[in-house]
Length: 58
Image (cartoon, one colour):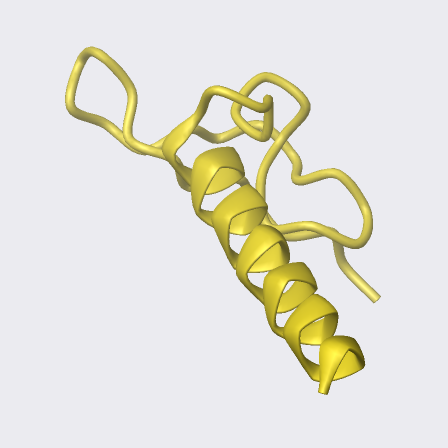
């Protein structure tokens, strides 16, 4: 099994060539909580948690 490349866009316009962290699609530099990918993942988890909370109330 080969480890994939990060592929996040960099400031120079190229794609990041660092190896992705196992279990994610981004390297440690680009998977932070404020990256676009991190924000998207956080919003998705928050939406799921909100739905679960609403289901419990019913």
